[in-house]
Image 1 (cartoon, rainbow, N blue to C red):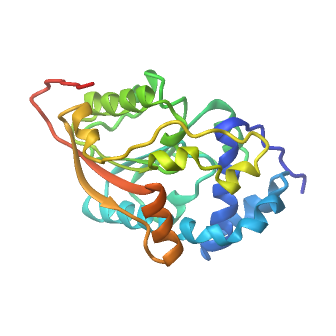
Image 2 (cartoon, rainbow, N blue to C red; image 1 turned 45 degrees about the horizontal axis):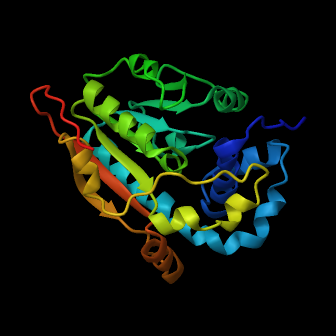
Length: 261
């Protein structure tokens, strides 16, 4: 079988780190293991940093748990995976009735289409989260909607992240969001796994106090904060660098939009 050359660079190249990491630590993620074998990329460059996979396990567990909990409450929910890369979470979470969207840049979706097939309930959106038109591609706005963004937002400028949250609040007033953030120190830290990529993208957005999100728009309500803590290493990473997952619930304000600088 011919291998597929991934046409990814910049922050998009980090999807290969995530793919390799999941293939190493998630025992039942057979698809991730298959893709590592089928993609023409030197994954061996990540091997020396295998110890950092402890954080991957902790982060994946938090996202899987929260997504599964949302689906348990809303069996016919819509899940929107922002910056999907080659994520395989749908195949672990599918209950036979959810609708799942994978959103990413054109080159990433083109790569994804070489390994995954769209169906009526499993759909791809070719766009940047900074674009405006992608919201119109999600047709089921009357259903409960859950946005997830794992390892994505920190590569964007704060203004772009802010606009993303406001756009979601404008178009999906009852949605929930789960996303990963880093602290200010992490953006200065030369993360060894990121540095092993060819692109070596830099981190831009950080968040010091989670309540700052609620000052951006009064419709944003932080409902839970998760710090990876299943091992000493992941806990220290979280405390030192500010890595955490934040669950936000959108609160309806009678259609009124209010933003703060």
